[in-house]
Image 1: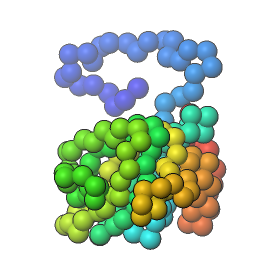
Image 2: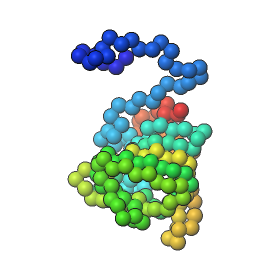
Image 3: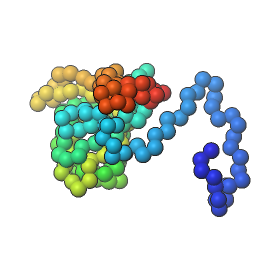
Image 4: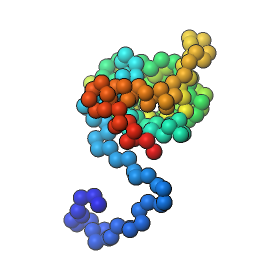
Amino acid sequence: MPERATNEFWKDLKPIQKVFQPDALPEAYIADAPTDDEKYYVPFTDTVSSRPLWISPSQNKWCDILMAKSAGLVNRHYHPHEVFAYTISGKWGYLEHDWTATAGDFVYETPGEGHTLVAFEHKDPMKVFFIVTGPLIWLDEAGEPNGYFDVHQYIAMCKAHYDKVGIGAAYIDSLYR
Protein backbone atom coordinates (compact mmCIF):
# COMPACT_ATOMS: atom_id res chain seq x y z
CA MET A 1 0.00 0.00 0.00
CA PRO A 2 1.24 3.51 -0.69
CA GLU A 3 1.58 5.90 2.21
CA ARG A 4 -1.44 6.02 4.46
CA ALA A 5 -4.24 8.33 3.34
CA THR A 6 -5.34 11.05 5.71
CA ASN A 7 -8.11 13.24 4.26
CA GLU A 8 -8.56 11.69 0.82
CA PHE A 9 -12.13 10.57 0.04
CA TRP A 10 -10.87 7.03 -0.65
CA LYS A 11 -8.99 6.62 2.65
CA ASP A 12 -11.17 3.69 3.83
CA LEU A 13 -11.14 1.84 0.49
CA LYS A 14 -9.59 -1.63 0.76
CA PRO A 15 -7.11 -2.81 -1.91
CA ILE A 16 -8.15 -5.72 -4.14
CA GLN A 17 -6.89 -9.13 -3.05
CA LYS A 18 -6.23 -10.61 -6.51
CA VAL A 19 -3.61 -8.18 -7.81
CA PHE A 20 -1.82 -10.26 -10.45
CA GLN A 21 -3.18 -12.70 -12.98
CA PRO A 22 -1.46 -16.11 -13.06
CA ASP A 23 2.08 -15.80 -14.46
CA ALA A 24 1.96 -11.99 -14.40
CA LEU A 25 5.17 -10.26 -13.38
CA PRO A 26 5.24 -7.47 -10.81
CA GLU A 27 5.31 -3.85 -11.87
CA ALA A 28 8.61 -2.07 -12.32
CA TYR A 29 8.77 0.80 -9.84
CA ILE A 30 11.79 3.09 -10.00
CA ALA A 31 11.89 6.03 -7.63
CA ASP A 32 13.51 9.23 -8.91
CA ALA A 33 13.81 7.91 -12.46
CA PRO A 34 15.47 11.09 -13.84
CA THR A 35 18.03 11.06 -11.01
CA ASP A 36 21.11 13.26 -11.07
CA ASP A 37 23.25 10.31 -9.90
CA GLU A 38 25.37 9.80 -13.00
CA LYS A 39 26.37 6.20 -12.24
CA TYR A 40 22.86 5.14 -13.38
CA TYR A 41 23.42 6.66 -16.83
CA VAL A 42 25.15 4.38 -19.31
CA PRO A 43 27.30 6.16 -21.91
CA PHE A 44 25.51 5.75 -25.23
CA THR A 45 27.77 8.08 -27.22
CA ASP A 46 30.62 10.35 -26.13
CA THR A 47 28.09 13.05 -25.20
CA VAL A 48 24.79 11.24 -24.43
CA SER A 49 23.93 8.66 -21.75
CA SER A 50 20.95 6.40 -21.09
CA ARG A 51 19.30 5.30 -17.86
CA PRO A 52 17.44 2.04 -18.48
CA LEU A 53 14.05 1.83 -16.74
CA TRP A 54 12.35 -1.18 -18.35
CA ILE A 55 13.58 -3.78 -20.83
CA SER A 56 11.78 -6.44 -22.85
CA PRO A 57 14.29 -8.70 -24.62
CA SER A 58 11.48 -10.75 -26.20
CA GLN A 59 9.89 -7.63 -27.75
CA ASN A 60 13.20 -5.91 -28.60
CA LYS A 61 11.93 -2.91 -26.63
CA TRP A 62 13.12 -0.66 -23.83
CA CYS A 63 12.29 2.53 -21.91
CA ASP A 64 15.01 4.87 -20.79
CA ILE A 65 15.91 8.41 -19.90
CA LEU A 66 18.37 9.84 -22.38
CA MET A 67 20.60 12.52 -20.86
CA ALA A 68 23.13 15.05 -22.14
CA LYS A 69 24.70 17.48 -19.67
CA SER A 70 25.76 19.84 -22.47
CA ALA A 71 25.73 19.80 -26.27
CA GLY A 72 25.18 16.19 -27.34
CA LEU A 73 24.70 13.98 -30.38
CA VAL A 74 23.24 10.57 -31.24
CA ASN A 75 24.36 9.70 -34.75
CA ARG A 76 22.04 9.41 -37.75
CA HIS A 77 19.58 6.57 -37.49
CA TYR A 78 16.03 5.49 -38.12
CA HIS A 79 13.64 3.20 -36.28
CA PRO A 80 11.63 0.55 -38.16
CA HIS A 81 9.05 0.84 -35.37
CA GLU A 82 7.43 3.74 -33.51
CA VAL A 83 9.17 5.68 -30.75
CA PHE A 84 7.63 7.90 -28.07
CA ALA A 85 9.48 10.68 -26.25
CA TYR A 86 8.59 13.02 -23.39
CA THR A 87 10.97 15.84 -22.51
CA ILE A 88 11.72 16.17 -18.79
CA SER A 89 14.30 18.95 -19.01
CA GLY A 90 16.78 20.66 -21.29
CA LYS A 91 16.52 21.28 -25.01
CA TRP A 92 16.88 18.86 -27.93
CA GLY A 93 15.71 18.13 -31.45
CA TYR A 94 16.50 16.47 -34.77
CA LEU A 95 18.58 18.20 -37.41
CA GLU A 96 16.03 17.06 -39.98
CA HIS A 97 12.97 18.69 -38.35
CA ASP A 98 11.81 22.25 -37.68
CA TRP A 99 10.95 21.88 -33.98
CA THR A 100 13.01 22.02 -30.78
CA ALA A 101 11.73 20.18 -27.71
CA THR A 102 11.89 21.57 -24.17
CA ALA A 103 10.45 20.48 -20.81
CA GLY A 104 6.90 19.17 -21.16
CA ASP A 105 7.07 18.47 -24.92
CA PHE A 106 5.95 15.12 -26.38
CA VAL A 107 7.23 13.59 -29.63
CA TYR A 108 5.88 10.61 -31.59
CA GLU A 109 8.33 9.24 -34.15
CA THR A 110 6.80 7.37 -37.04
CA PRO A 111 8.35 4.08 -38.16
CA GLY A 112 11.03 4.59 -40.80
CA GLU A 113 11.79 8.23 -39.96
CA GLY A 114 15.50 9.06 -40.21
CA HIS A 115 17.03 11.70 -37.96
CA THR A 116 20.07 12.97 -36.08
CA LEU A 117 19.37 13.66 -32.40
CA VAL A 118 21.10 16.76 -31.00
CA ALA A 119 21.08 18.21 -27.49
CA PHE A 120 21.57 21.95 -27.09
CA GLU A 121 23.54 23.87 -24.50
CA HIS A 122 21.00 24.69 -21.78
CA LYS A 123 20.93 25.61 -18.10
CA ASP A 124 19.37 22.18 -17.40
CA PRO A 125 20.63 18.86 -18.74
CA MET A 126 18.64 17.30 -21.54
CA LYS A 127 16.60 14.48 -20.01
CA VAL A 128 14.08 12.75 -22.25
CA PHE A 129 11.97 9.69 -21.44
CA PHE A 130 11.94 7.38 -24.49
CA ILE A 131 9.95 4.25 -25.33
CA VAL A 132 11.93 2.48 -28.06
CA THR A 133 10.63 -0.53 -29.99
CA GLY A 134 12.99 -2.46 -32.21
CA PRO A 135 16.48 -1.55 -33.30
CA LEU A 136 18.06 1.73 -34.26
CA ILE A 137 19.35 1.41 -37.82
CA TRP A 138 22.52 3.50 -38.15
CA LEU A 139 22.72 5.61 -41.32
CA ASP A 140 25.57 7.04 -43.34
CA GLU A 141 25.63 10.64 -44.66
CA ALA A 142 23.47 9.62 -47.62
CA GLY A 143 20.87 8.06 -45.33
CA GLU A 144 21.79 4.48 -46.21
CA PRO A 145 21.93 1.78 -43.50
CA ASN A 146 25.39 0.90 -42.20
CA GLY A 147 24.72 -0.90 -38.89
CA TYR A 148 22.21 -1.38 -36.12
CA PHE A 149 21.74 -1.26 -32.35
CA ASP A 150 19.08 -3.41 -30.70
CA VAL A 151 17.90 -4.43 -27.23
CA HIS A 152 20.55 -7.15 -26.93
CA GLN A 153 23.37 -4.69 -27.56
CA TYR A 154 21.66 -2.27 -25.17
CA ILE A 155 21.56 -4.94 -22.45
CA ALA A 156 25.24 -5.81 -22.93
CA MET A 157 26.24 -2.14 -22.85
CA CYS A 158 24.21 -1.52 -19.67
CA LYS A 159 25.50 -4.63 -17.88
CA ALA A 160 29.13 -3.73 -18.64
CA HIS A 161 28.64 -0.18 -17.34
CA TYR A 162 26.79 -1.26 -14.20
CA ASP A 163 29.52 -3.79 -13.40
CA LYS A 164 32.14 -1.08 -13.89
CA VAL A 165 30.44 1.45 -11.55
CA GLY A 166 29.61 -1.07 -8.81
CA ILE A 167 25.85 -1.39 -9.31
CA GLY A 168 26.28 -4.86 -10.80
CA ALA A 169 25.05 -6.40 -14.04
CA ALA A 170 22.24 -8.23 -12.24
CA TYR A 171 20.45 -4.89 -11.80
CA ILE A 172 19.64 -4.96 -15.52
CA ASP A 173 18.01 -8.39 -15.14
CA SER A 174 15.63 -6.83 -12.60
CA LEU A 175 14.30 -4.51 -15.33
CA TYR A 176 13.18 -7.36 -17.63
CA ARG A 177 9.48 -7.73 -18.18
